[in-house]
Image 1 (cartoon, rainbow, N blue to C red):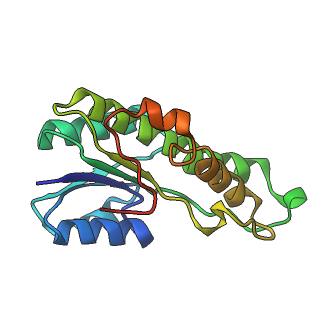
Image 2: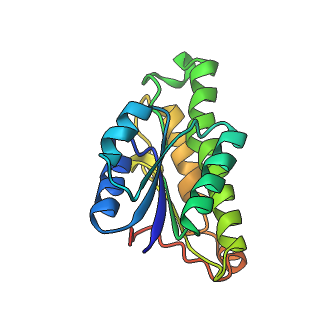
Length: 182
């Protein structure tokens, strides 16, 4: 049985991917902050592992991935999807706190989860897996008054392994396919 961890699994695209994976027979680790929403996604499925965590907490991320791998035996895929929206405003009106909150969740959280997944995938036998970093639409075209989201999406899209041949060469036996979920 294939295994996947989905971040941002409590709503939106993350929830849809988690539910589709469960219905497809996958073993699914569900990561988000809201345990009640994660329980609703799991819906009593024995192949769902509810892992309520804040992706900005390095220790919590490490514990979630370690727990999942200990209970399932391996990690085949990470769907890295957790993210937040901050209030839309022209750049001169964006608060520093909103900007830092967006960076912490949307960029640092993505990094922490990818790092934990890569470590698990490298340590397992056989080695390998997929890491899918999901960014929103402004990963390419910027939008007016959405500077916080646009900047993190640009970073995730333009500097990810899918766009960097050097990073791809380092991911021996790893397949990063941003346009394919399965």
